[in-house]
Image 1 (tube, rainbow, N blue to C red):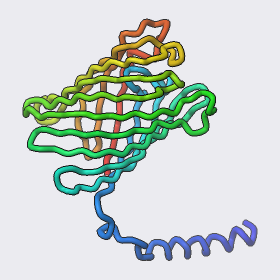
Image 2 (cartoon, rainbow, N blue to C red):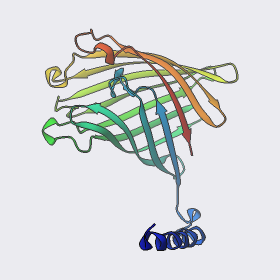
Image 3 (tube, rainbow, N blue to C red):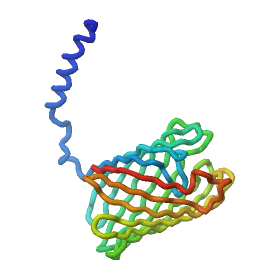
Image 4 (cartoon, rainbow, N blue to C red):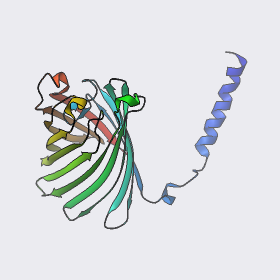
Length: 242
């Protein structure tokens, strides 16, 4: 061990000790609204029925902020995941929106900007969507429906509209059965790489020692020449919210 490294150890210990006892610059109670975070490990990142990681695992996480002002709440967040595209290994999504609830009825209108840092700008991966949605809790099941509209979708493929519906049904005390169906229409199918298509899926979820655990299958009506092994995916996910 040389002298500089020998000296660095007590200096580092002193810095860590000082940091551990330092007062926060801003107290959490002094910031209006609430922050939350989430992290997940999944065996496959599937977006609208198509694997984004070429059937490989993904580590995902996000931070969200919300402020309730009575009849509604504003929210903002950032979420990220590894992906496996040509010239892209990371996806970062930014969301802002407003939503609220009244009894069993809920609504939300959000804007989402999907980005792929490090990818060539000529690929035009980045895109924007506006996403209104409605939900209702019937007690025995809750349903959600919405549309996501993009004026210029992934890969510079023009106008795109994704319409979807989902249902969550409690099964006994510990499990929830979920199903979803959606339809993606795209103005320039050649630029995107597939025809317009339908996706659908079913999953089961539960909570174990504070962790969320889910397993599900999803597929599309695209043929093998357009989707191949990227569709018809079974994935298992482990998540934690803070």
